[in-house]
Image (tube, rainbow, N blue to C red; front, side, top):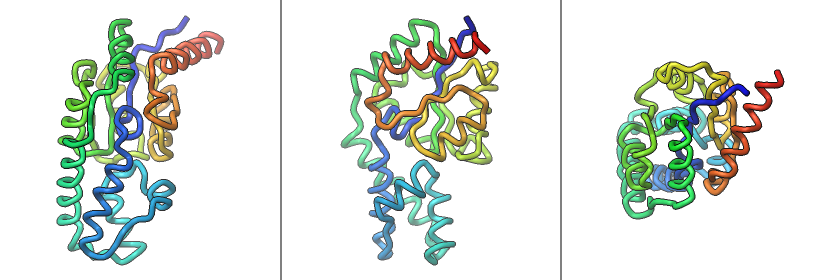
Length: 213
């Protein structure tokens, strides 16, 4: 049977329940200037995109002055960090899943459209840093998701073929990037779906598909 050797995780909405944190932090920064994104817009259009891309879209679609981008981005990161320090905590089922996978020889990485500092603090607060080989942020690539560059870079860094990897994603932009990389893609709805039994089930199914191909 062909073997998958690595599992690459998105972070927000996959390993960390942070989708609402980013939404709340950006809205708090935007509301300083009388603007906000509705929850519907967030879920349908903006979810999974880097803050800089969201602000560029708001300038094009709603006339947000580009001169405010840096200040809003800085405030958003500050508000996000405050939420992380108050709300980000270890989840046993994630620690258990990653621990089992590591013991079974799977290599693991994180690819997130968040900035480097946010990822670093989140995985430390969630007690996942001991299982992850490396992570890539939107500062480590030229094009963020939905472009596949982040995933192709991670796969190349591991020295693996895309089919030897499984990517775990939850939102449309991330799923597009994962599929375009050529890797196997496990799609989840919530962080609770990212448990050992579910991950292992998908790994075995993909390995069986490859053996039958």
